[in-house]
Amino acid sequence: MKSVIVKPQVTVRQPSFPCLMYAKDGLVVLFSKPECGMVVIPNRYWEVGAISTSWGMEHFKPFNGVIQLSNDETFAGHLDV
Image 1 (cartoon, helix red, strand yellow):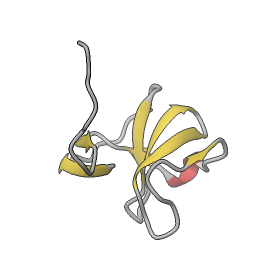
Image 2: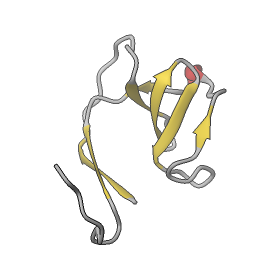
Image 3: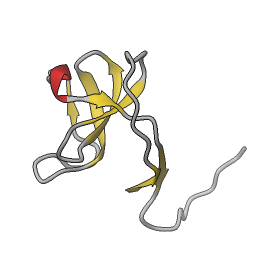
Image 4: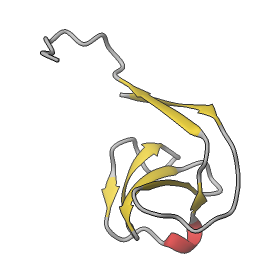
């Protein structure tokens, strides 16, 4: 999986969940509720997909940009939509 920041924007507001939040080292986490979330943009310690239920919320600010998610390889399966 790869993740790309398409349009970063920074504003300060209280998050409603689910929400994206970022840390000063570039880590971006998709939070499902306070302290619980999954990494979508990694840093040097956390990889994409890592999950924690004890993120320190004081280290994060709301992320208001756009993040595009896609698979690294072409999907070889079949989707019935």
